[in-house]
Image 1 (tube, rainbow, N blue to C red):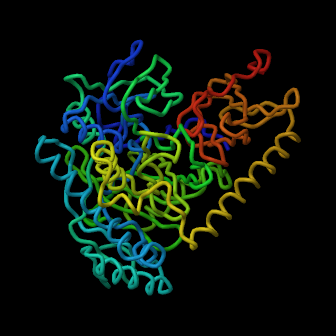
Image 2: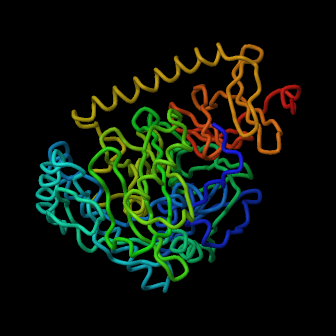
Length: 511
């Protein structure tokens, strides 16, 4: 489907903050701890370590807070859909309590930092709701409220909400929060930098040599450190099979101007699709954030542009929408047991730690991970660490998810290669893209609005899956493990760390 003339997606958080311009690494560096990844996990951990007296280098491949953290719904909440009843049955009471405590503490951490540093980031405590979309969801909502309350969370069942449509009921958590994530984290980054600590942009980490000390190999030199925290969205340094224990998903968000007052609470639906709603102030008025239409990354039926249209249709069905101001997509990794991986990266990776798999709840999950990881580096232990242990044996209940997700990945690999090898060599029309076969290999070809043809290898360099076109974002996405690339082949997110090779010069023709 053509997106010719359509305004490209733009995150509210990136559009309403200034771009950063930190220097890249030049040659080499030695610090106490290297933190790979300039999102909420990495910056939270870095600030904790700096305040503990360490020197830290935050290493970011692009610009800080432009990855997953820059495309969030920005809810700061311990309410993660319907999870606590499941945690009690699969992990047990003590580990479920750790999960709850970690996420509640993350809210307090953000609030404390906002107050201490005077950060203007629209932080506000608000109630959060997971609502039953239909009567069949109500029993699960009630069970969730009971489980959450038993773990000490501020949960109760309510029958009425401020939504403009009827719901059978909802579980409400009081004293949750929302904020502007980039405004918050850009201030945190400034606190990290200085006195022997660094924020390094446009410096891509390529490998880690664990040990005492560790060495991070980057595109611009090496960083030597006693410890390394891998806080990229997906651990590019994967020595523990994370690609098989997590699966990537995308969802879509709109920020719309409505005639009327948006709901004050933050809402998440227990049905399918799980619609999410909250408001956010922009230049003196509250915009309504509406999101949903989640799917596995790389799926393009329906095309991603249609996902945005469905979000807009939902918004217009229930609100008097005057305009769509911003639209963007989230890209998250979900663990097979719904709990993030936070702790030692692997059994043979001495002094290397990881935080990943936040499953759509990265603002609290990433903050909690930063608190845990910094303490593991400093003291070797943390009271919440057990439930998040990356080396854990997944509960039996997650085994089916593990088998299903990896079977789906294998199906994508085989099916897409078969389709690619049957593809023609016809170039796409203006504003469209396709996978063509040339010399027995698949290439992704996109013709932009000016008629220029951009060709790249359509084979993901991570594990050789065939890429699919994302027509709304104008990216090549991997349906197997979620790597994403620009239409010119530059890697946007891993697990891939290398750009896509360009097509042979004779294929980049205007046709």
